[in-house]
Length: 239
Image (tube, rainbow, N blue to C red; front, side, top):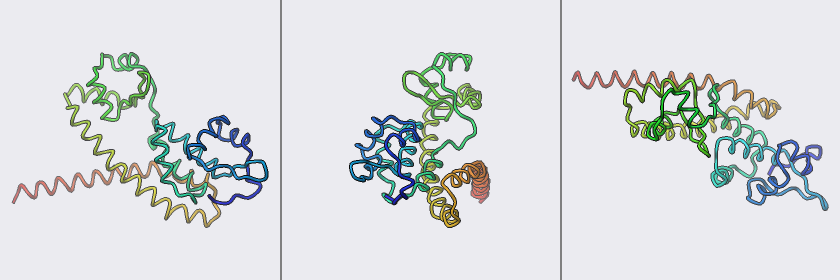
């Protein structure tokens, strides 16, 4: 764990206030190895920006629905010498890239919004299409701007299994892109700003600003690849 300056050390109460957690939760996460033990100075324990960054990362993972087991696996992959800036970058990359935030609603509210009763298969298809995200206790997160498109796909009889297969493909390639983008920011972007003395907040702002450009680039790359695929298909048929 990176060494902290004396003025950066926090007491347990100060850490809890900064991160918005109870003492009990901080101690629980420490016992599970999600954050390192406090630094001992005499009979007192102190916490560093690294502890703060790791707890904020845990909160970010929780907000995305990660289970405790999944959080433990994710955190286990973070190097012990990761800096607060490294943790800030990981947290920012996890944050939603789309401007729209899903709206939480019950199944009854979702059906009312859809203007129809939605079967379990309908909900599976909408979930695979990325329109509806099942939560606990019968609640759903709904990408409202995409709901009409998803309902139109249902009306056209889009196969549920095809939607699930597509979702698996998107997830697989999405993980690859996420890992490569994170490595790019970690090895080529953050070092430049670090050498300039930039803060973790500056890194967060850079990533947030580049997200829409990255999304646009992905769409452009997809369209170019589709055009190339169509040309290759036409060329094969004309032989």
